[in-house]
Amino acid sequence: MTNMTLQVEGMSCGHCVNSIEGALKAIGVVGKVDLTKNTVDVSFDENQVNLEAVKEAIEEQGYDVE
Image 1 (cartoon, helix red, strand yellow):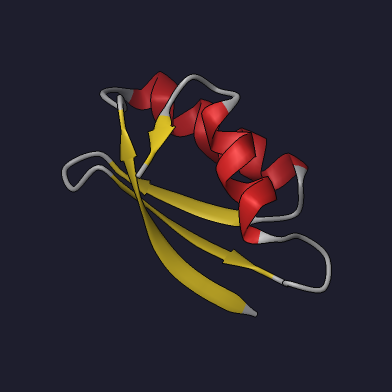
Image 2 (image 1 turned 180 degrees about the vertical axis):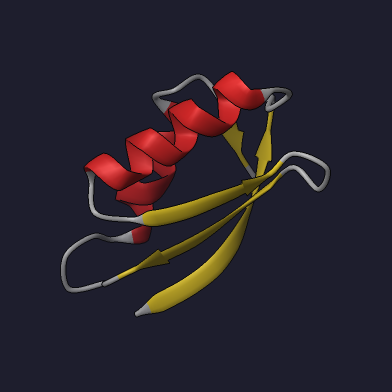
């Protein structure tokens, strides 16, 4: 399993948390949003999903991954 923290801009509320965590779950990634730090902790199997797919899932929800 790969664990990392991504800086994500544009998150501000519970809807942001739900949309990001839901999008990640849909591709098999465990994600935990921290609104106070503007971060998303992700855990995924690199044999199943790559980092670009993780970033794309977040960006498709309208947020910017640093």
